[in-house]
Image (cartoon, rainbow, N blue to C red; front, side):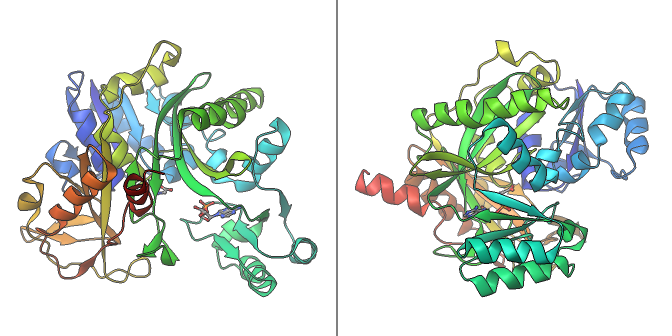
Length: 426
Ligand code: AMP
Ligand code: GLY
């Protein structure tokens, strides 16, 4: 098969690594890709926003499957447009990608199909939103409706913070994403990322992970896209997985089909495991980044076979096998992230870092004058496996020691919750 992979981050590097291991693969193309992905794929410059250019490329190169990494093109309808040209695509339609593209859409779906989530209100005007917040009180959560690259959420611990966040939303702080806001109940518990491979009718559980969203050790500082992750998530016991499937995922699959927008692709549920059980925080309609990196390290089966089965509506006949090992990834970021990262600094020592079995996925790198340089906020994902999360953590941090990049930084405590559990046996 000829495959075209869209995207340029660590998630896409991990996908390329796994797709390249498939005996089904003839040739992999990636656009725009990155230097790490370039080891497995021919990198092509396509204007991904121009769907007919992508389609023409697919026809010329006889692409059998397009795999879409990030949410932007999905929400913009790339899967529908390519399918209209007869091209097979792994990824949801524009209508199904509303699960990520509109928080209000997802909240309404939860209400309609009785899916456990935080209580909420949806508002298009400031006065009504303020009145609701004043009635409910703090702590409370304010979210811009649309895609805001992780920046549209305020966890307000006081009424003043909540009112300020509302004013900022309606003032355009989140661009057009803030034209409507969702105000929701503050949930407490442990968070987990839960993935399902979906073909429109069947959802196949596809691994669990825990992410670390804050930039600093001890979960401090501003939110990021994710500073590290590990898999599996211990909080997702077989019982919790079964409840999540029954109470959240299956009603979502039925609900989306019922609305004429069956979901096919990766459904990524951000969960809060509360005293009452799993509650949906949000959906994403693509793999998590950096969660994908740890999932791919543990996946025993051929990814391309599974993606094909999802595209062909054959998941009811499939199963997935995972390594018993844990996997953990540490994100190395450029100074300045999650604000404006410094670009262009030289990175050395990747071969030494990988010599002990770690995988170094590239997230934001470029080649400049023959040298590998930082070219984004999140730059490298240093990833390892081990019999326990603690062992994987030791191996991943051991590998970071070989990376010579003074302008980079990373958290020192990725996996702390799981390691603590392993040590105390709780
Ligand atoms: P989101 O962009 O929706 O994933 O939100 C970012 C982060 O905010 C989540 O990972 C949670 O840590 C937190 N969060 C979002 N919604 C809630 C909520 N209703 N209660 C508590 N924390 C939340
Ligand atoms: N790591 C969280 C996300 O990909 O949305």
